[in-house]
Image (tube, rainbow, N blue to C red):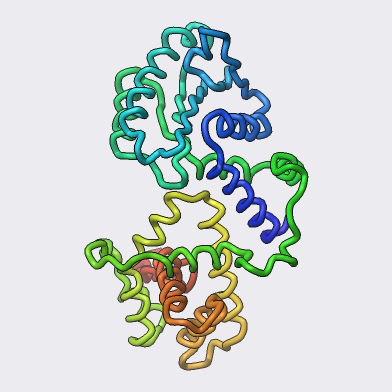
Length: 316
């Protein structure tokens, strides 16, 4: 499966998740987990007895999953906390003697928005009180599992067909286009601008021989790194890894184009990456790409990591 095909599959699956609620969401989750884990067992509700607070589990690993998919997750904090408490009590009362509970996953249809800190706190309390690893399992996690499946399994879950990306013209068929669009649509909020401590951008800039102008562009746009970090926190690993590959490959292309003896080589490579990553010459798009370049510059996926010079040994 090509990157473009995987991206289309991701969009289809993401839309399925976002449009699913209640039993439909649970059925989709179970179908993905059964394809991923041959030892995963869905639990069928038994009349009034229900499923004993267990929508699916792996007996070998002791992993248990409880699904909650309200239509409007943003307004269900109180209900979520109550349901988590009732779920863990019910799980322990019935299932602990059948198969020891080692890991508990709160499967929540968060619509790619994350969960409240109070939910994380409740799961942490369960870990401390019952010695059971407890974590949220959100849309991004389900998407990660889905994208790890074989091509045949992915296509089967999507109904047997993935549209040919060559005939899609109205939307960008890559993660880069999606993230640029995301960044350009955000409202500006100066109160959220931060620059992480312990990040020595100046040292990296000097080491890579970038000019002060280009260095300032990276530094100023890294102040908005929280925007892309937030996007990554709500989305699957596929997005971050694909973008990393895009920028790393563009940087490598630049290294091949501009010879080492060119005085302004680092700046020329910078301009090359910026131009190639920008679908249009528009300020909002350029700013979005610069935020991404600053992010991957900091992580040294583009340009080189400063290395401390090794002291020669006095005696050998």
